[in-house]
Image (cartoon, rainbow over all chains, first blue to last red; front, side, top):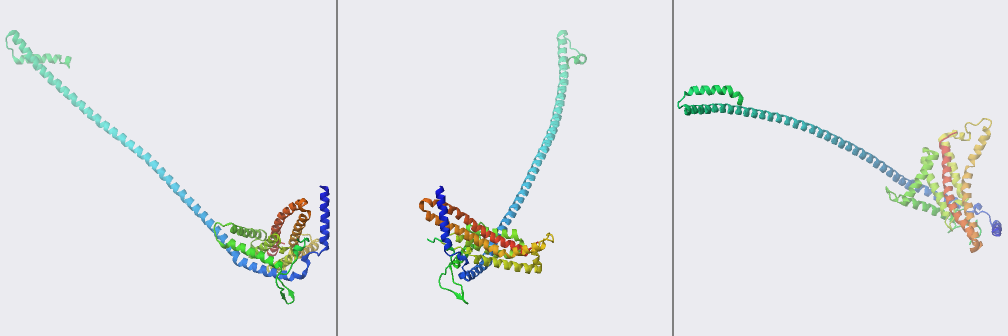
Length: 191
Length: 244
C-alpha cells in the first residue's frame, strides 16, 4: 500500500511537471477574447429578450392562474361548508321542533283522552245510577204490588177459610180491614 | 487522448474566420456551447410553459420551480424593489447554470471556465448596479462607502476599505466562478488521466475519485450559478436600498 501511494505521488509529480512544461492556461490567451465577448453579449442578449418577453410572462400567468384557481376553489369550499353547516343547523332545528311538537301532541292527546275517559266515566256512572234508581223503583213497585196482591190473596184465603169453617159468608169489607190491619202490623217483618 | 488537463479549455475556431474592423470575431467552440446552453434554456422554458395546465407535468413543474426559486431569492435578498430586474437575474442564473451543467458532459466545453466570459458578466453587473445606485440615490449613493456607527478615527480607513471592496466586486465575482469551474474540470481531467495511466490494476482508486468528483462538480456547478445570482441580488440590494 505504501509503495502504491509512493508510486501515485511520483506519477502526480511527473504528470504535473510535464503539464507545466507545456503552454499555461488557455484562458489567458487573448486571441479569442473579443470573439468570446461578442458571442456572449449577442447570445445572452437574445436569451434575455426571449426569456423576459415570452417565457417569464407565460410562466407567471400559469402560476397566477393556478393560485387564483386554488384560491377560488378554497373559497368555494368554505362557502359550501358554510352552506352545509347552515343546512345542518336548519335540519337540527326542524328536528328539534318536530320533537317538541310530538311531545306537545302526545301531552294534548293524553289530556284529551283523559278528559274523554273522565266524561265518559261520569256519563256511564250517571247512567248506571239512573238504571239503579229505576231498578230500585221497579223493585219498590213490585214490592208494593206484591203487598196488595198478597193482601188480596190473604183476604180471599181468609174469607174462604172462614166460609169453609163456619159456613157463613162473612162481610167482605171487615175481612179486608182485618187483613189490612194484620199486614200493616207485620209488614215490617217481611220488607 | 488529450493528456494535458488544460487542453480542454482551449478555444478554437469553427467555420470561417469572421473579422470586423480588424477584430477576430470568429465562431468558436466557446460560442457553440454558449449557443447550445442558450438553446437548451429556451427549449426547456418553451416546453415548461407550453401547456398551461393547472396540474403541471414534470417539465412545467421544473420550469415553475426555477421561476419561484429565483423569484424567492430576489425577494429575500433585494426586496420588492428588485422586481424589474427579475428577468435579468433569472436569465443570468439560467445561463450560468446551463453553461456549467453543459460543461459537465464529456467532450464538451465549459463556457464559464473562461475568465473573459465571467469578467464581462461581472463587469456588466458592476457597472449596471453602480448606474442604478446613482440614478436612484444621486450622490447619496456614495454614502455606501461610509458605514454608520463607525468611530470617526476609523472612518477614513474604513472608507478606503469599503471603496476597495466595492471595486473588487467584479474581480471576485468573475474569478470565483471561473476558478471554480476551471479547477473542477482540471481535477476531473487529471484523475481521468490517472485512470488511464494506472491501467486496469491501479485505475480503480482514481476512477472512484473521478466518480465522486463528478458528483461534487455537479453540486459546484449549481452552487456557483446560485452564488453568482445571489451576489448579483446582494449588489442590487445595496444599490436599491441604501442601508448605510
